[in-house]
Length: 517
Image (cartoon, rainbow, N blue to C red; front, side, top):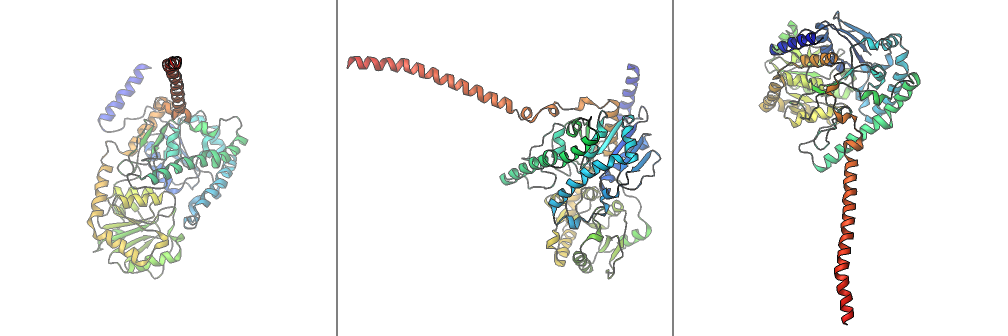
């Protein structure tokens, strides 16, 4: 047994010296659970799934979307509950009422917890869950799959990057004095007001989600079906590893535990050749090209007509050509605008003649733009997009506009400023170079740590002792209370001693004085 282990370690060492991952000791079975994830979240999981599959591992993916992977080692299993497919959501409507999104989640997620385990393929997977060497879940909104995690090693992959609520589960409680929450970005250093507000958001959202609203509602549904299981939040604490779609060059540098690994921009890749028609359109643009896409969730067709018309008018006033991802045919489009339902985004962004990327500010799109060194104009819609838009502006990577304030002149002026001021190109290039300058590609890093957790049977050595502490112990409130109590007792005793000494000294003098009188 020892000799076999030593052989594996030697092979791994040689592989690391050669800059390549060594062959796995055997083929692993890995289950990935994404029952409520968006297509953009799936785009983070896919590179990891395919990289693991390329190494001979068998991957099973439970999703809320149709089958998409053609890899022979990847089995896509859609749960076929159409009401939980968020691809048709109109987030332009949702952004009018942000609190309504959370109210909707309070209904949707408990309902999914009730319906999911009635689906035959899900029931079968649940029965077979211990056959898998590890389970990988999307950490966001996926408490409904926590029953799968009972007595099975599991990893969380966070497409949205570092999130304070999830980080605290691992024992790494982020300090709101410098760590922004997952929805907003702030000027550095934070003022007293920002630190106060950020503290309330950190604590308030965690309490709302985990203690007061969503998780208790999900827990009620899960307990009705699996009364023998531990509480969901107790299952969550057994996480072996967190893979984070973040990198210190493109986000706030934060302290990390051994169980937290940054694999930001894992989905980014070198450019591939463009289709000939698209290549000719871009290359032939004497003044350059502007690329406009609102991502995979925010469909351009859901954009209110008044905004669409503003962009059409603005583009007609520009000398640049525009490539616009739009899911339907458009009439009265200027001659300098190309409309397409689908576009190879990374290959377009990598082209030297593409000068600006108009984006909704999604994290994946922002990472792709930085990776390919393309300045941005952000139009945040919801979620973490306003935070990313503020990061783009604060970092000098471009600018961001607010939908409700849009005018034709504002769009033209913002694009003209980014196009004509070389600082934006210089700043995004300055950030792109260190993002690419990594000792190991992020996909290989994610593969290594996934296999590491399997090889070491959950890798308990990565676990921080802080994860086992209560809040009273973690904040040392008991120690502080005890120190205060000891200090109070000592001061009380000292005061009594001083009073006794004073009484002895001055009390006798007082009596002598009275006798002399």
